[in-house]
Length: 115
Image 1 (spheres, helix red, strand yellow):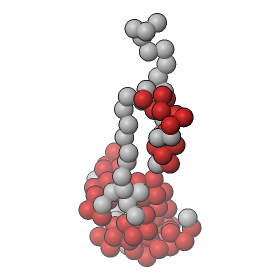
Image 2 (cartoon, helix red, strand yellow; image 1 turned 180 degrees about the vertical axis):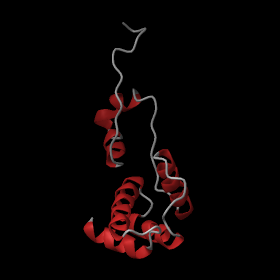
Image 3 (tube, one colour; image 1 turned 180 degrees about the horizontal axis):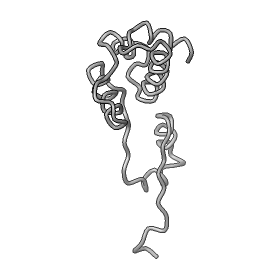
Image 4 (cartoon, helix red, strand yellow; image 1 turned 90 degrees about the vertical axis):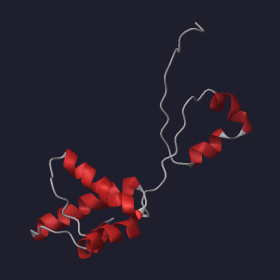
């Protein structure tokens, strides 16, 4: 029984889980976690490649986001990938509604009002 792992668990949570696992009552459990990773927010310079990568996976060759919209996205999301994804989808929906080829910071502000 000791030669095999009887179960494999993947824990995904907010950063407060790390604080809870640090408690002495959970030290035995925390010691058995072999790999830990903390995803930090993206920098302003990382947001455009992040969005472009996701768009290229879906077949979009050129990002419709203007440099000003990327800066506004950073301002509204603080670089948190989950928030970037949600806001970018709303921005693209607003741009589709306006039938525009370039998404501006006005689209970001309009989409941010809906969150």
